[in-house]
Length: 243
Image (tube, rainbow, N blue to C red; front, side, top):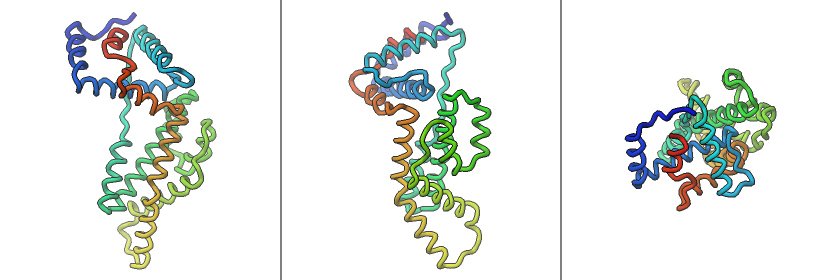
């Protein structure tokens, strides 16, 4: 069994900190990220399990981690929340071109995240997945690639809106410096406004898609369990299992 890198003083400080309101919130956020990652990577499967059964599976998973000689837990950086926040902020400020650009980047991050997650479940090498992401265009990623990975392609109405959003983003980023007739500029602005009016429904659809096919429809359940009065994994129990 691997030895803990935490000293007795470290454990005492952690136990004291997680007893505070701030510590409890931070702890639950860390555990939520950890559980979502384990579900995403196929290490934990909450489908068909009661809360108590799920808790037992989590405890067993932590015991497996503790038994390994090298215990490395990687928390991935996800920039999508900040991208979406900024996209909405620029939208409220009527800066539609920057809002469009940020929504488009959010969608690109979203589909790449789906490809890597489902691809790794299918035992595809990460280097190959990175090459797929670099070389395939957005049309391929949203349709036949998803089917090859074993999940449905994106619904046609949202697929069409996404492609149009990308075209508008590219028009702004790559060709904005070109002079355009006033009539064309007005049409472009109206087109951009109409596209952005429907983009939030597409974001909602993509989030539901991710929850269904990455988290087995269990993402809200995990969050509810952690932030209700029934803490799924108390800090003192987790410390014993991992330390």
